[in-house]
Image 1 (tube, rainbow, N blue to C red):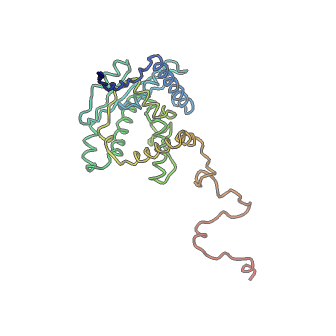
Image 2 (cartoon, rainbow, N blue to C red; image 1 turned 90 degrees about the vertical axis):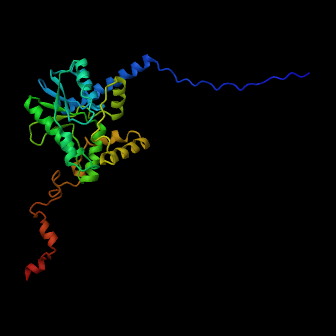
Image 3 (cartoon, rainbow, N blue to C red; image 1 turned 180 degrees about the horizontal axis):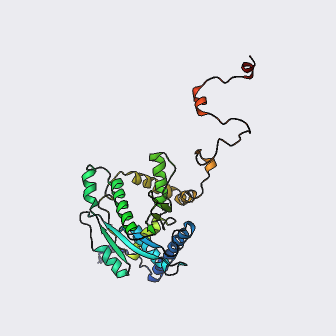
Length: 307
């Protein structure tokens, strides 16, 4: 008699995700923090962003960039060669569902001096801008005005914004593609009214590094419900282009960022930056007259002059 046996299918193997080594994670986080401190410190030194006795207003929006900026500046403050003051300032624009408690609770735990400016710019923007249109431009102007006013009233010598390397590159392309000019977002800027010096300590820092650092630090991120949800913005189009470039040719954005600090006026076309008229000009010869060139009138020859 032949015995029969039932063969049961083997259970599917349980796929286990590798457990991250806490020591390795801490090591990588330490390396990232060190790199950010070095890049921020280099930007501060290269552009003279912070001087002895400065009172710096650190604009804190609740996003990953401004959290990272504040955190790195606090670290650098402990060992900086100069003494300076840091005060975190947030503008509560009274957006719907804005979690007012998040920033104060975070800053109090961190022991950081802070102030919350309350100004209902959201109602103004919502009333003025038609539904579906981009609110960013007007919102930015109102926010800048409120921050500048507070800085002037409270004796701040520098205003620190959280724009990073990728922001600087994106702004350059925005101005070139949509406004026909070669200009960008400088690491250090004198405001239009010449009353405020704006600094961008993250000018050398990659956005990807900031995102990684913010996640590792578990910053309580506050999303922007006013303009962050709007699609088809020019800046988003440029960012999509930059992301594609970086995927295809890693390091291209870094190369472009470095190029913004290596301008060759004689290799461009702006006569206000380079004296093209005098280039190759002979002594005694008249400088070209644009009206005469455009008029198209015949120039007298030597034979004409003799008759």
